[in-house]
Length: 293
Image (cartoon, rainbow, N blue to C red; front, side):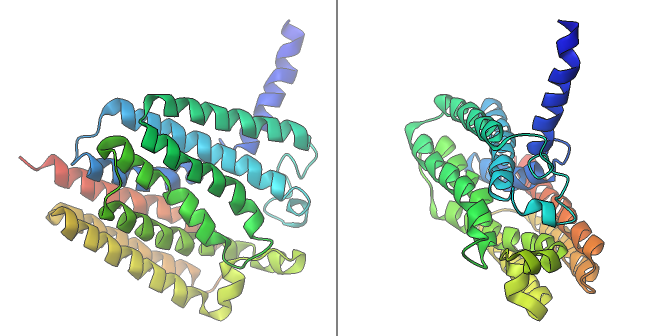
């Protein structure tokens, strides 16, 4: 039995790297808009069990997304400096085994839905479709980031339906704000791989926007902030929420400074910085609701 432990641990390590467990930034970026939606839908007092379900769902769906992404990119990741050591590209795991892991993760996420209402279950189908579609969109369109944005934002209508048994207009405004944000930061991410992607024929907004990349990212960041301000007016949020948006805007400016010379490492740092941007928006939202008597 003890002889089986090292091979098992090695296998679990491969699965973990395939799911990007050691790189939680993706889970954080899925988590923040989801938490915005849960807090707004529940007027600052979401049920703890529902929050836990959505947090677990964010981890599982992001992990599943990473696995299906690597399956789709298994023949090209080896030609990109940043991805050549991923398990599938490096030959550490077979495609069939990775696909089995993807299915298991989807089944685990589906198990969480048993505790939620029927409308939320129906809306969740969209999350699965988007998770599967996104990795293949970079072969057919220069706008795969829009599909990623929809995938990352899909927890928003799910959160509203889980709490309110419906999705009001504000839920769709919040979804649109999130899509603008995701396209902005994932374009920063795509700027890291732009030279490699051009060589291997992978499409992205970074390639499409070309020399206008920083300008369009800035426009998307402003659109996100404008929509979040609109959300604040629609809900009747107070000064602490808007202070959180001011801090988020400051981070947006910082990100623009990072990407101004389009250096790979700086663009990657700008992408990572969006974790804090999303966190400040939530902090303002959380504190604003917490101070309401």
